[in-house]
Length: 390
Image 1 (cartoon, one colour):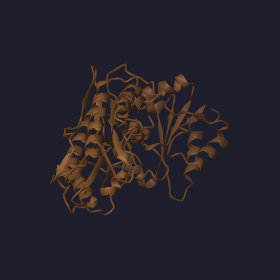
Image 2 (cartoon, rainbow, N blue to C red; image 1 turned 90 degrees about the vertical axis):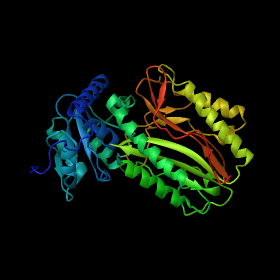
Image 3 (tube, rainbow, N blue to C red; image 1 turned 135 degrees about the vertical axis):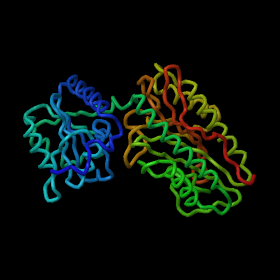
Image 4 (spheres, one colour; image 1 turned 45 degrees about the vertical axis):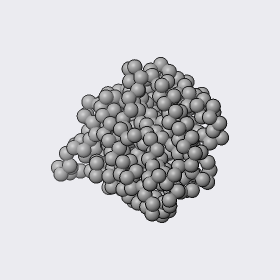
């Protein structure tokens, strides 16, 4: 196939050597698990190992990574040149829209001598159709579970990855500042989101893995509420949370605002959120279990009497994401029972929020990177409640 108009790796997020190192580490994981190959369907893991990215992952794609030998990519014809531009893999097995991609994958597996071998797939993957698993099982007899092999590598970011997150955080800062500036009587949540998205994208952001979580008035009291043409009046809260992206690496931020006098109850809850975040961050350093910052946060909230207003984890890993999420919570969370130790290079979004359901929500967050001695926040927006016309 003629690729003269597209240069191999011309849009790759990282140098070729970075992917070679990642693939070598993934192969080492396969060897430890006693596996001959891993079939990878998740767009995040595919991007991590190869650089391939496309919004067209709603059609079937799969990376077959053998324990020995070169990886092979199964991809739709329409995505082929995108694949060449984003990766340093010289070729792929390309299927047409008239072909069955799962049957095509099985032919590729057979052609690589993997029939009868120990082939694994990520059984927890969001993008693993049941039909793919059943077809693999029928052909191979046993399909092993490769969940966690690539994810374990993604949990700790390299310096090059942290640079991507720093840029994403600068885009979030631009978006959040614009959103807070747009808070005023008569402005709708749509107005806030329009300002946030425009500023973040103008600053450099690509498309996000999830839409901003922005709401106004009583709608802020519903978790994960999104904008719906609701104007702010003279005594209303505004809740703003968004992520932005650089080369698929996401940073996120949550802030709160209020038009008019802030009720004493909301003042107190915002103060508790800020104290809970600070207490959690005080515990972040290498060697500490992931549950420890969460427990510190929860203690502050419990002591203030808001246990019923905070029924969630403190935070989650951030990094590579495609829709439907901007986080890597499936890899690592800051939550009770998570004993994994923090390591330098891990990156998290910590969004403690308190809400009275159906009335209002207040919250504040930071995206951080764990350092050799503690942590470093990537954003620069003030954590204070933004007050408008008070």
